[in-house]
Image: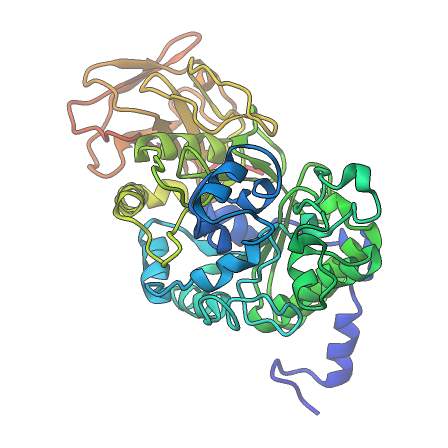
Amino acid sequence: MASLFGFNCSTQAEEVKKYEPAWESLGQRDAAPEWFADAKLGIYFHWGIYSVPAYGGEWYPYHMYRDGNVHEHHVKTYGEPSRFNYHDFVPMFKAEKFNAEDWAQLFDDAGAKFAGPCAQHHDGFAMWDSEVNPWNAADRGPKQDITGLLEKTIKARGMKFITTFHHARNGQRYADKPEQWGGYNSHYAYHPDFATSSTDPDISKLYGNMTEAAFNQYWFDQLQEVIDQYSPDIIWFDSWLKMIPQEYRKKFAAYYLNEAQKKRQDVVIAYKQVDLPSSVGVLDIEQGGKKDLSESVWLTDVTLSTKSWCYIEGQKYKPAELVVRNMIDVWSKNGVVLLNISPRADGVINQDQRDILHKIGTWMKKHEEAVYGTRAFDVYGFGHAKTDAGKHGGQSATTQYTAEDGRFLRSKDGKTLYLFMLGKPDAGKEIEIRDLAGHTYCPEGGFKRITVLGSGVEAPFHWAKRNFWLKVPDSEMDDIATVFKMELNEPMDWK
């Protein structure tokens, strides 16, 4: 019998068996497909039950059961957690103003090439229509299939779809260890006074109170369900994936890759630290970036906000200038950016965030030729910006770049080099670029012309013995980042 893809069932079955649950087999593919390297920017969001209290951040359920300011706030506002537990917030998460079409259009306008939800955070609440997890957005709270609605609207705009998973932390690992009931590696503090210790077959699933073997299967079953129902192009994992036994990690990867193969998808698995082999997935560095050029494509997840990943009262946001300049630095080092935004519990993405996203999108559209589908040059750039260390490795995602800092990207056809000045250079200023002097790909006389992208105004340039000089023309420079298009006389065979 013929299939929808034009091959018979036996052939399809043979292809499904291609990936075995073994690292060697799972590594026999390009972990970062070309579309992913081309994309440069994706958007996701921390939005769930934790958005209701809008206090302290997305780790509210962790802290409300432990001593500290979140616990004190909870007691003062809602009562003792022995009486008002985390699951009591669920009916308050109504998402009554959520509009999937509006959100997808906003992500598209911002210049994202992939987007999607935090499908499940550490708190155990599923943002999709689940038969596996009774605590899901279709049956409780919003009573809408949030993931399904977004999948349709995002894919309809030609974007790829991402789902992120943080639920490896959700398992209750200290039920049999009273001396460790508040242990860090369980998101919920176990205690008989709280619902976190409930053995009720329904409630225990939210709080992860089950045997280790049962939880590991529960972890996998939810991933399988999302793969089957929504066919995400990227599945991204937060830290703590290492808590899941390797046999389950391998089982997941084999299932995902085989299903993707049947659906003709080139998919991405993203991970942190050393939770997966580099041959199987794309490394993500949280709130930061690599300090130097990387041979492999990598990812960083960063916040638009300054205080937490989810919406909280009094939240502040980074200016578009800071976000874009740090994104350019990531791209120049062979990275891709996953930008997190913070909707309110009612489903509103506030105007402050919208304004910043639209400003980012305007810059992206103006310079799209130099962004999408480009690749890192063999030097990432130059300048003197001070880069602080990132909290999770690499460098900080809030580096203050200026018009003294430059970054490179190149076209895949070898005809063009793009120079991004991370600020607004003054007209008449001469920019010294030593890395281009005598460069194999850019010998003296190698440039046909250099123009300001967006205006087409030509920029004078000349060579010296040990450096290259570019003069900023008397043309309107971009307030966020000015891009110079450097056309080569002869295409170079960049590999």
